[in-house]
Image (cartoon, rainbow, N blue to C red):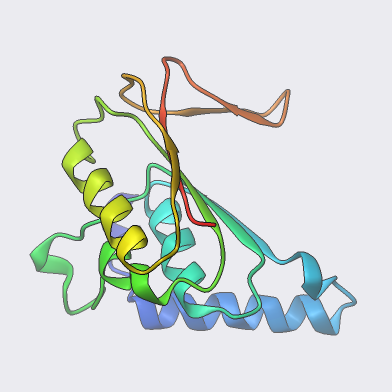
Length: 152
């Protein structure tokens, strides 16, 4: 599925999310409670949409990529880290320090980018490869301790 998911351009993804927001408003949805949550590429989307939408109230990114592969530049012009100065909504990022797919150095770079943009990240850190989401409790938990990164 990833090859299909990873060929969707950011511009198209953002347009789809904007259309979903407009549809929800038209159908009586509470625009004052607009949020986004995503895992993996969806986690990246949470960051990207947080930089795009002035209507978004909050987002949660479960281990979404913070730095994009150079091969994706035509589809994904700016990474989450590059968009940090444009954040318009608080986004909570949940990252495992031992995650081999998203190295701690990238999480630290995102924290620095948010701090430089005066977004004031709040973070806690302990070793972990990934986070898990427990549907039964509705709370984010970790198979092992996790790193959390968020904008305020």
